[in-house]
Amino acid sequence: MSTLPSRSPEPRVEPQRGGSAVLGKSVIVKGQILSREDLTIDGEVEGTVELQEHRLTIGPNGKVVATIKAREVVVIGTVHGNVETTDRLEIRKDAKLVGDIKTTRVVIEDGAYFKGNIDIVRTEAPRPAAPPAPKPHAVPSPATANSPAMAAGAGETKR
Image 1 (tube, rainbow, N blue to C red):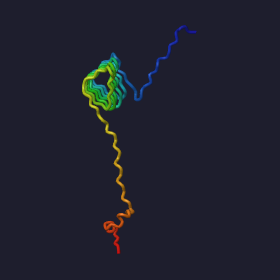
Image 2: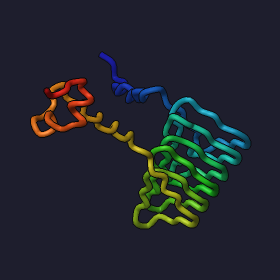
Image 3: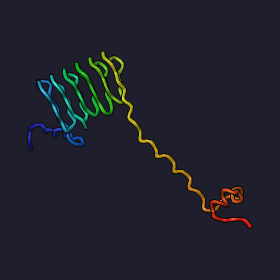
Image 4: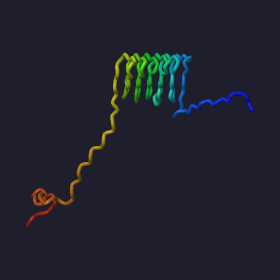
């Protein structure tokens, strides 16, 4: 029998759809970040960040001085720069964002700090096709069957 305390297994973090990457709080990046998966930044980034089809989360320790383009952005830390999203931007309480926003949806929680302009972009919903024009009937109605134009157009003559 062992006298060592049993160790519980490490909790498993299941990868999200498409994967997920994390820049820890001791990481500093200067330059351009392009990602094809969700990204969480809890360190410092200066430059540009692009995640066209994915979600960017700025963690509580995150300090980003950059232009950001992503499908969805959640700010919990600090961002200085313009943010453009195709879906949604969320600025959580205690977060700070200084810059202009271009998005379809925005959430600014009570206690968050925001300074800049917001441009809400409306996505054009596909318009339904116009109803087809009614087809002319092959059988004329009784009111028009006896009209001279109808008689001449049909090639009939009255005798």
